[in-house]
Length: 199
View (cartoon, rainbow, N blue to C red):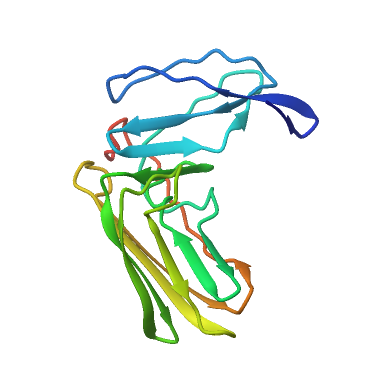
C-alpha cells in the first residue's frame, strides 16, 4: 500500500526477523522512499513503532531501553457522549520516541474517579497493543462537566526491566468531549549499556 511522507511516496514495509540473542544486533538494508515499521517481541512484551520514512544514510535504533512507561502513539482514551473508554494497551513502551508497547503477562487495575469519588474500576490482563479488549476501562459518566482522575497500574514478573508501571491523570471532561487529554512524559537516560545498566 502506498502512502505519502511529505512529498515522497512511500511503501509500508514490515520485515520479520527470527529470534536473536539479547542484547543483539540486527542489520537491515532498506531502499529510501519506503516507510519502515519496526517491532520487538520478548515473551509477552510487544514493542512497536509507528513507522518511519527510510532516508539515505545510516540509521541506528535501540529497543527495550529504559525507562519503560506509558505511550499514546495509539489513541487510548475517549469520551463519547457520557461514556468513557480507556485502553491500557500502551503502558509498556520503551524510552524511544514514536513507540508503544504492551505486555501480555502484565496484570493490574484501572480506576476512574469523579470529583474524588470512584465511579468505575476494572481488572486489566492480557493487554495487547494490537487489540484493546479485554484491557480497557469503560464507564458511564454523569452528564455535564467534572474533574476526573484516571489511574492505571500494571505489574509483571516476566521482565526484569520495569516490573511495574503506575500512572495517574487528572483532567476536566464534559459531555461529548472526544479524545481525553492524557499525556505521558517519556524518559530516556543517557549513559546506559546494552543491558540498561549505568555505564
